Every structure is written in C-alpha cells, then in structure tokens.
Image (cartoon, rainbow, N blue to C red; front, side, top):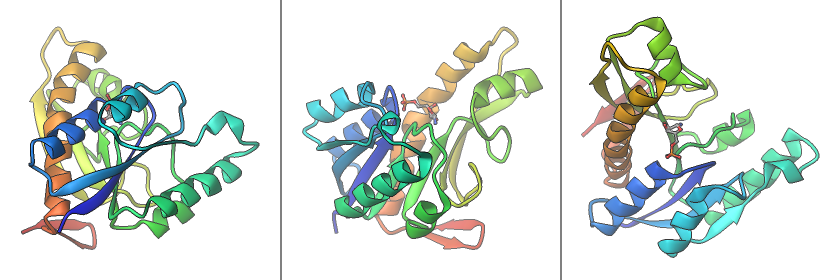
Amino acid sequence: MTKRIAVVASGRGSNFQAVIDAIGDGLIPARCVALITDNPKAFAIERARRADIPVTIVDYTSFPSREVYEKALLEVMRQVNADLFVLAGYMRILGKDLVREFAGEMVNIHPALLPSFTGLHAQRQAIQHGVKIAGCTVHFVDEHLDGGPIILQLCVPVFEGDDEASLAERILEEEHLALPEAVRLFCEDRLTIEGRIVRIR
Ligand code: GRF
C-alpha cells in the first residue's frame, strides 16, 4: 500500500530531492505529503513547490522558547498524519516527547559512519580524527543524538588531500543513494526493529 511520508528539513534539501526523485521514478511506494521546515529561507521549500508538495514552515525564531516551538512542531507533525517522517538535514535536536511519539516512524540521515562522529560537522570530525574510511548512516530516531537503530550505511574512502568540503561532497553522493533506499525498505514494510538491531527482510 502507498505510504504517506513527510520530510523535515532545514536547508539545501538535496537529500529531500533524492527522495522526491526516487518517488517520481516509481522506486518508492509512497507519496510525499508534506515538507516541514524550521527555516523560512530553506532551499528545500523551493524544491517542494516544484514538486507540488505542501510546505509548512514552523519558524523557530518566531517562538518565545524551544518548548513552545517543539509543541507547534509536534502539532504540525500530528496533522500531516504520515506513516514515516524523514529527517533530511534537519539541524535541530528533537525533544523527547516528540521522539517518543514517533518511535519507529522517524528516520534520519547522518553524514558519518555512526556511532562515530555524532552531532554537527561530522565530516570535519572525521578529517580531524584521521579516519581512512568515512560514510553516511540512515537510522531510526531515538532519544539519543544520532544514536538510534541503524538501517543502512554506505562508506567512502578518505584521501590524503581531502578537506572537510571534498569529503562532504563524496559522502553526499552516497547519502543520495542511502536515504531513498532506506525509505523504500520502510515503505515496503521490510524493516523490523529488535532492540538496537534493524532486520531487513
Ligand atoms: C547532509 O549532509 C545530511 O547528512 C546532514 O545535513 C546535510 C543536509 O544536506 N544531516 P541537504 O540539505 O540534504 O542537501
């Protein structure tokens, strides 16, 4: 059955675009029913408009506190009534209530091979640590930052002359494969979570 997915993004939205394209190509049995963003300037909004996807802006800066913002976001997420929420470059930490409510129904893409290099500037952390292999991870979201059960990981080499930008670009190409693939597996009902372990049927 066709699933309803909603994407939550804060910026450029190239991962969002990869999901839009995969749906358009018939690779994912889903309809993208909403883009939700905390940033009125996000280029993701333009991508949604081009693809005829309804946009809801929950502008973080217009709320008096993080708590009030989170309540508004939660309400919007309830209303879109999605089977799956896809965090694609959402740059804020989600509150515990929200994470609990959508447990098992929310995935995130992170530009590192978790559990290494959680949080911001993961590619910079990888360069500074001197790893020889880097990559990306798609995982279910739980209450730990970038810590939920792992669905898929793709890796890339780190070369001698790499800097943060060149590594980020190489990883991003893999993100654009990994995220649509993980969304497809979810939408085909092929994922089950057993504790920390995601089984793929
Ligand atoms: C990606 O590298 C993603 O892994 C990270 O933020 C970046 C967002 O890029 N969480 P985009 O907005 O999808 O182009």
